[in-house]
Length: 137
Image 1 (cartoon, rainbow, N blue to C red):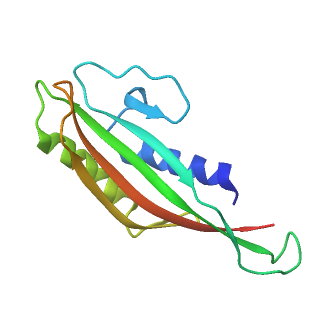
Image 2 (cartoon, one colour):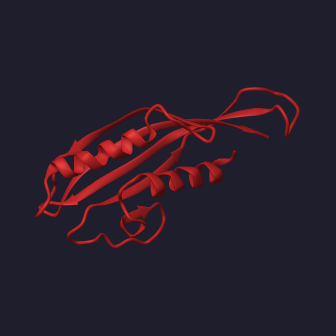
Image 3 (tube, rainbow, N blue to C red):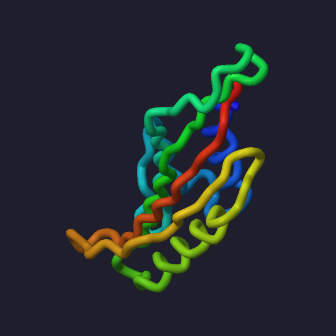
């Protein structure tokens, strides 16, 4: 599995596993206009520098360890919603990945933080999940 395949798997898992329609998901690098009166999420996948685990035969046993962070920011409108709605969305994201292996991607160290509102527009919680997988090259 390479980085693009891992991103596709994480994105597909979010689409299939969260009660948020695709139209309310801000994907990394794509234009998005937040809905005014509905909750929504922003997804950011960040890979860290890799480690080579073995010096085997190229394409068969030479293994590279890929690690990184999946960050999902959860938002709900400050007017008409409560912090409980944002926290529940964050819990849904955390539970979708925490301690699970999806395809060959291992997810661990999941948690979230509530963010104090900076203005009167959005309530927010940020979910951070560490992931790891191996790539044969």
